[in-house]
Length: 337
Image (cartoon, rainbow, N blue to C red; front, side, top):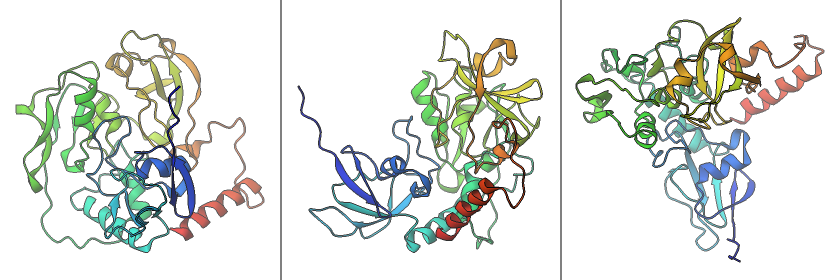
């Protein structure tokens, strides 16, 4: 029998958890859950090599380890920093981290246009959530913003480079689940952009997954473009026998019509299993699928406003005990941040 690997203890915002050696601070925080989990715009646990680019997951290491208790001199990216036994980390309990995260959000929004009223990603955009929680009212940036022309990088994918935050997720997913990546980062510095070589089309059976991994509205589904807002739709889990992929998807309904098909995502907004283009684009009828039931949506998401998981929606009145408790949770969370 192989010897059991000893776990290491790490304390994040006063909560101690035991994890496997080599675990990052971010994944250790995800084992605890809740508001202690740092936000991540570029890290994707399913994509090897991702992380370390957006810097939104910065945390403060107030104690290095039991052997060397000295604190780390600067804030570190939690997605790239592995835990050590006895490490103590501060996230939302550190004013320094909150202020740094506010600056990072301001930097991400420097060139990001105010496209939310017309963007298909609105309602499920990580940058919207980040700006709401950590954004500043005004920007100090006074120079001309970079702009790019919209281009088609395939018959199903629209690229809005103005919205891109250069998280590299789309290039990683193309590298790791296809054998024919034709897009990447062109240029340097402020001129960097996601593009294809002489605008060559992305054409492979898993190309649609670049849409699912994009945290903003830079890569959007042309078949869903301007059709509806996500909070007016009802997501439903379904599956089919697909020879190419797992066939496990989320169907987004408006009435009896399937407006779009996406891969299923976990509680951190990451795709559980990547799906093929046949499932995504060519099977948009209910009789193509075996319906499993409503997709669970977190109560903090605007999509959950439909209360479609409940047989009888709760009345919105002051005497509603569940509503009172939910308001208290939100108030405590806002106060802590």
